[in-house]
Length: 113
Image (cartoon, rainbow, N blue to C red):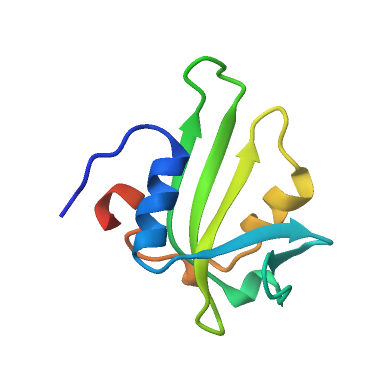
């Protein structure tokens, strides 16, 4: 069933945390890292369950993508990636390198929440 949330990333993050996606992933040294355990993941270790783009209501340059992630070792969480003029290019390349086969066939976040 499709749910309607506001256009803020935090609303979706909270909804996914309630569904068990509790890990916060950080990007450091060309790898995605579990903020708590410090386990490092390469693009092929990541599975994208859903993703959603956001644009700041008051600042169009405030753009981000929320990724809902599962890893090869069955950890589940989220990662917020900035994009647009202020994007970290290495981080964006990391997500481009995730194999297409690792994306859910229905990666629309609105269909999954």
